[in-house]
Amino acid sequence: MERAELIVAQAMPQFSRIAEAQNVVVWSEESQFATQALQRNKQLRECDPTTIQNAIINVAATGLTLNPADGYAYLIPEYNKQTKQNECQLRISFKGLTAAATSTGICEWIRAEVVKENDTFNWLGVDEKPEHKMQPFGDRGQPVGVYCVAKLTSGDFMCEVMQWEEVKKIQACAKAQSVWSAWPEEMAKKAVIKRAAKQWPKNRASSVLHKTIEVMNDSEGNRDPMAEMERTADDILTLLDQDDLMGVGQIWTECTEAEQATLWTAKTKGGWFTMEQKSKIREAASGYAAANHAADAQTGG
Image: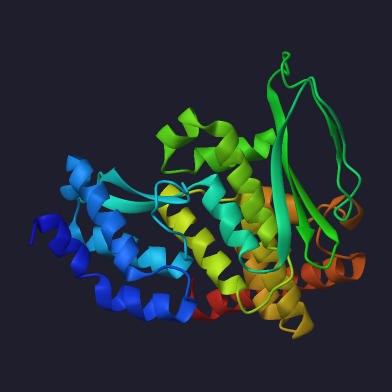
């Protein structure tokens, strides 16, 4: 058995266990696609074998085939400066992400488009398709934003929009800078779909989509600052419901001034908190600061 085949074969037990539960991809096919990828690419063969096996196992976890004809996912070598060696990553394409989203049965179809400065774009709300007119064969100018429209199987629409400045912030946090440089619009579409997916209804198959997004984030290193704000806001709202003001105070105090300003945005402008909740947050922050000051005084800090 060749080295490539041996490395791939060692991933079989865990791949098969996960794949049997998903019943989407099969070992006999994916192992062949993986072996062929390694045989064609010397850099890929030189990757840490464990990272190759982990990438192949992620094929089972996401249900996205390595079949080049589909173009859903690829094994990619990437140099790690810390370990000073090539590591294998499962790189998921825009097509792969949309396939993962529709396979949940939540969305009938998904469309993401980049809006440019010479386009006409009218945003009609989160539950209405926006109006987007463009001249595809003319000079559309520079990108100004990106949006995603998902038609749910219920027949309803769910839409998400992202300014290009937000896209650039996500790009700045990415590990895969060369990919962003080569395909900025495709990466922007992936970013807005990932954000939109957080708002879609959930079902038993949703975990596969979220695993796909997790694999993409690990591989590409795309941190979404707004998504992180949403998670912080959700944590604060949960603690407010539990009347845990010390917990609220701790989270709020650990936020930077810029993060606090973003979180404090008026609810009518896309913010998270009502006036009553903001009053509770002020009380929580004040109480947390006072408790810390008293603790410092007792310990002589």
